[in-house]
Length: 108
Image (tube, rainbow, N blue to C red; front, top):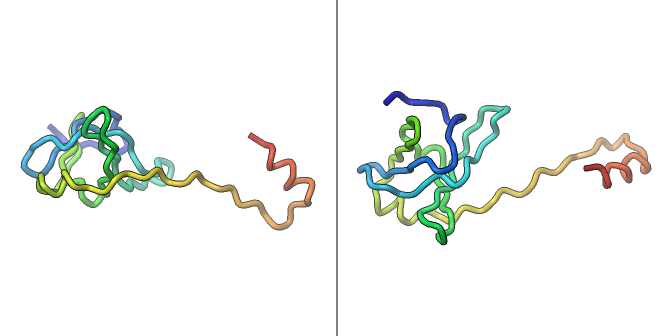
């Protein structure tokens, strides 16, 4: 299989350790598509297991439906728990009037 871009990774793709043993399935892709910055993956090993975080640097190869890590199985089994990134915060220019700032609080 030929390699593909991180941009087409989908939830549910298989994630395997360096020896080919299954680590889990993709739970979430972490990155910024607009800036083409791949940060890593949240990988789930079961329905009730908390997702674990795999940094992009540990991803060795991405093919359609499969992600290979450069980690040995024992290290892949002990990855840190994935913590959701905080929501983005909009920074308003200081030049806005108090009324404009107030209106922005209630904008969705």
